[in-house]
Length: 206
Image 1 (cartoon, rainbow, N blue to C red):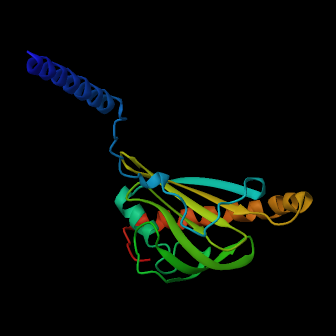
Image 2: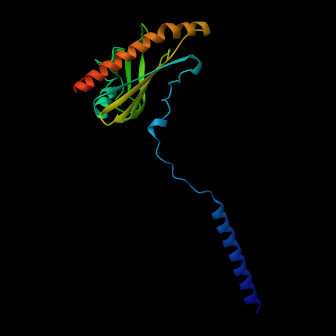
Image 3: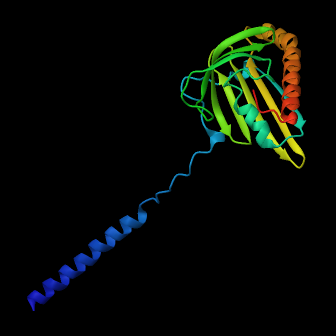
């Protein structure tokens, strides 16, 4: 009789122990499988600072091009490979990384901006085929170009936003905006007009 009683106690303890373990397992947080990173949310590469909002001047332009989005993106994707004949703002460019045609591609460039020639590394930090591509200069004053493409029934709308930092104090930055903004706008108009002409002629060379 005593042996039976001890067996019952042991069985009861075993049930309580298994019950506690089950409760512990139920309280563990669920492990979520992380989703792949989207290219539009990719952080700037290490060592590349973001533009300072209080010093940044933005200029946005767009144009309709009677050519497929694939042709337009192909021209934009080669912008930092060699000086494009449709972009007079890029004076020289020389790839310095083995990475090409994707995020992280880096080139040494000379960029004409508002009458000045800026020399710096340019790093691609957004690359979405047939949708968008962006690059940024690593040296100050910071310059960044964001391109986006929108497919239309008879062509493509191409938009470009050029952001650049204005040096100096408040008054100097204001003068910079007044004096250089018009030049930058004219330069972007020229860039888009020449991009349109080449894309619509069906020329793929840069």
